[in-house]
Image (cartoon, rainbow, N blue to C red; front, side, top):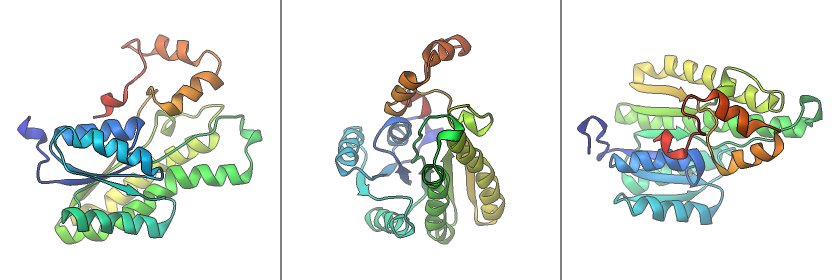
Length: 226
């Protein structure tokens, strides 16, 4: 293990950590020795991810929770702290998308996408803050998107939410720096996951355009996020 990335005494929560980008991030944490709580709404996927991470030699908890619910966010943090004795890292990665022209979204769809992609990260951060403050610091990493910086004709609410993730991260970072809590956002491009499989089907020519404009000549992989 590279000592610069030794997390053997650290505990991390990864929301949406049971697949895709979240699992890729969790694997990076596991390789560095962190103990991990994988959080998601699908208990079966949570357990499968926990077993996969556990096979890497780290201790893992699978926690079923809906991070759009304030009570679930608090319970997620308390279960993690009770299990491992501390909380050092929170990765807010839970998210989803529905792709269509802006005029076709209903208000319910707009509100739902903002809640899942933005409000959930705020609720989880608020839940983690007291634990991190009491222990002298922590790290919060929010998953934004390339669409945090530019929109897409088929993703108005998703792009709005992910833009909000960046500004929220800046606000939390400024507020919680005094508590030695660093808050950052990462903005992935096109990553080959179950979520983007649908994008390839729904957006004509997307696959070819991604390959043409990406220097590596390929889609990103979840493992790239480690």
